Image 1 (cartoon, rainbow, N blue to C red):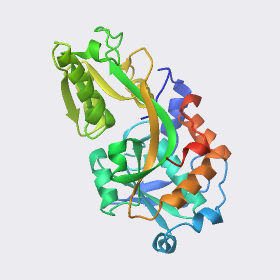
Image 2 (cartoon, rainbow, N blue to C red):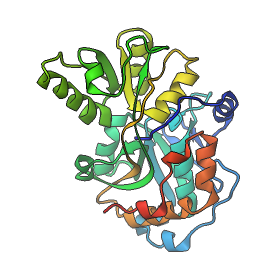
Image 3 (cartoon, rainbow, N blue to C red):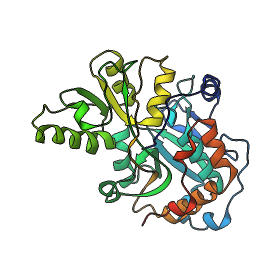
Image 4 (cartoon, one colour):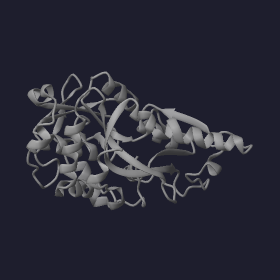
Length: 308
């Protein structure tokens, strides 16, 4: 997931992010209705890239709508605006930008994180944009188009009274939370816990929650000692929570690529790859990163969009 080398966010930038509205609204049925998004939440209009558009499956091109699923509990990447209906955030803006390049309207659909990849595989959604870390295991189920890079961090109580770090040796015997279905719950925490037991220490008390908000609440209520997730999001969420938790000091754990997810049978891979390259080569990419205060270290190059 996305990494961050610092936990500081400017208050003015956060207020701007909270005040900004995306290009979507949620219907009474709970489905987010999309509108044209030529500027993708930025100041630069994106023109339709006809070469990328020509790569779209005929069904999607004729329908004119791209359905994107995300879990809106993960600021600054995807969360509800103050109306508790409109999905805003980095992924929402990037999804709108990809849609604009492809000449499609974008429909943002809220979903729980662990249901998105199965939904792509079944054809329920066209795309998944919810800060998915690219892994070999996930690549067996879906295709990925990278757009950022980063690593895992650890949220702790203010002042980090237990001196925790993103290292197995400091977490043995501790209650550590993560969002269900995340790379932290599936891979990192189990591996850390195994490292503890193999060293003759107590296993990590791993607690997995359906949403990031639930995991954060477990930390602020004292039920767990830490929460593991991508570091940019944890730092941002801690600031929005008025400093009730903070990012533990230290480097990110194993920075990885983060990507848009696509069903393997969707036929969208070539078009989304081409559209993502177009966005990365435009001023919009930097504008979206600046808007949501992502550090420059998270940016990738167009050459990294196509996975080997």
